[in-house]
Length: 71
Image (cartoon, rainbow, N blue to C red):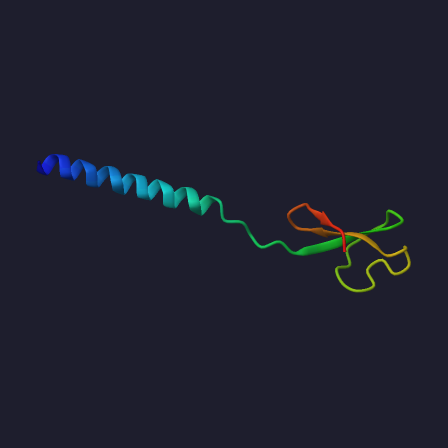
């Protein structure tokens, strides 16, 4: 009986540890704005207001995770 209980406890702890480890690998760094693509195709490293002021405005904002979102 004691051996079965110890085995169940050990299996539970191993399962819990593996779930915790898997969860840690899925943590993502917060994304941040790294630049802009202007309406005329120009790419700018500016991240704020006026980034594409002489290029027809911002087409999309570029982010550190590789995405580009419309303003």
